[in-house]
Length: 361
Image (cartoon, rainbow, N blue to C red):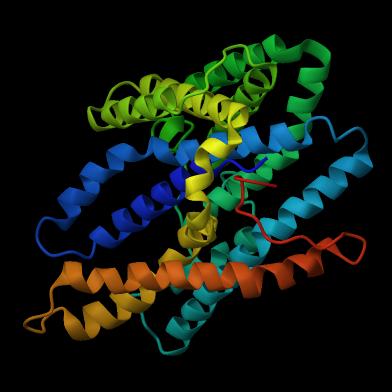
């Protein structure tokens, strides 16, 4: 099943992340605005919860052997890795160019040193202390870690059921809290982790898996989208008020549960959103492409040529990279990612249209 509201939420979160990063280039007040937007950081965890929900809903009953798991992994790598590779090589080329021209202000040594970790997609496992090179793709590395750990969810559900998975999540969260208290995470707390973001993401991923089971069993019969939207609104308010991490996390999880229950009960209820899906399904691309647009439009064009030009309003100018990012993401989804994905899947895999990562499989 295709969850249209989840697609819309993912796109909204991707646009907010893009706006957050672009605001650092704004004139006076931009950094303060970006710092305020950072309060919405748990929306990144919503990405991983949705991913865990959809993957569990789609694959939990279809993986019964190592061969099944290998095919699952190949399909997921084929979905995410092409865009990760293309954008990573762009930043690697920038670093090589900076080295060639002797641009000592550019950290090309650190960037190129991180390249092997990025190509292996292990840069969210703690192999570096800071984000380098293609910084946003720590989330891709984190996704791959969650996929690698997915059999743990499948085995737990088959052996101990939904309650067993709930207890596993509780134990895992306790472990993350202990690690945070021991200063294991460079960011301070696991909910802010990026260089160690894989372990944060897997917590969210398991929560999404638990939500999938609740929805499958229909433990609560919700048919209206009102509860889900209200809970999401409360989650955003909790983030802005800087409530303890477990408050917005719980509200996000409840919101996803209520929304999925409503959409599975009445799939036609979101039919009006169908025309938007061509755009919203490119949310992964918007998230991954926007640093390249940031480099081209802000690092190069804005900071070198336009920042001191009278009459050029930053916020009007910022619409150009934003719209360009969406356009490039849509074109990439249609013309770039499918072909590269087929190379990874191989001839034995039946070709499928690219779907938004984590929103449909």
